[in-house]
Length: 46
Length: 283
Length: 176
Image (cartoon, rainbow over the protein chains, first blue to last red):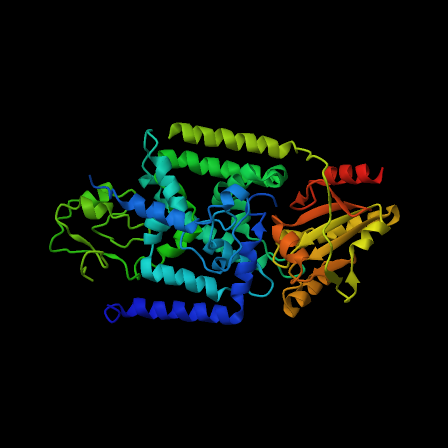
């Protein structure tokens, strides 16, 4: 199935690389910090 | 008859799994564990006390708006991963906010067609570009931080899943709600009202996440195909499609949320999924 | 179904109304927990600092919180205004204790926003950090503490702008 979908497989590999690059850059910490501290703006408290 | 009677079960399961931190609804405290480093596929506010993962759109704005990064490989990578695997199947099966609109649509009323309003479907791409990407990137303060423009000003899911459950339980939150909450509540009420009369108006016209996944519908592993030897061009699929897609002509249209109603409606079984639960599908 | 939606809409209306007319929270008194923190110059700080002033405004903020950072100039103004009145304002940079990088980032933010009031870096191993700061609902959160080290009333959630009345009312009550 992977061979038949060359384009999709290629995109899949790009996605995996990007995720790895993001982890390596330390983006996960930024995501986690925002997600675990209540985003008051998101709930309309500004 | 044409509707997939079992889709709601998956939607319910997805909603429950996405918001499995049930104690949060009673304590008014959001989940703070490590799972929140990973995004859920659908639109689910990470300020929801039940949310166990983070919202992809919220996270994207958080990273773009941070002073450290201008782009997020991590979040965009995850979004592309979901997109290339499933495309807008996420919208049809895994998004809690999508399911919410569908439930509202079940309320008996005159149902209006969105076919003539097709131009509005372009709006969501504009929202993705401007509110999720450009504004957080460009409008920064002295220390290089940008606001989450979509979350702050537009997202109704934040009110439904965040503000309401929290305010119900937490006095501090309740007394701190201000004009911003009033504005977003109006948006939520607007979406709720529209959803009764139109099918999934937010998904069609406003959702930046749906807009992103839409770009992958044609290249995702999970996709539809039309067997032209069987298709009689009767149009039964288009008639049943609530997303206004002429399936027999464009089976992987950007507006298709892959609910599968067309597959059931087709009298010749001409529409096939590339991946099925029962045995091999044709690619 | 209809009933549920009707209820939801009514609920929303009620909430919007309560949002506009702010409920004054009961004046409760609870001691502010023991600090375990240093300022950005490395000096250890304790709760004794509350005793030097009639009232202290304690603002909790994090590196990732845009609205916390946006309101810093306003807080600096309050700090300057209150200088002659024996009212202090301090900040707690709750993410500055996570790593050297976060500390550096916090220091950059404070400088960039022109903040001169004292900011604390909590010790991430302490109960102060794990229990007290761990229980904070969201940021920014502002406490008002009297000279005996007691928190007066429930914390103010969100930016101070728009809540000045509440803030001043509390301070007046304490100072009298």
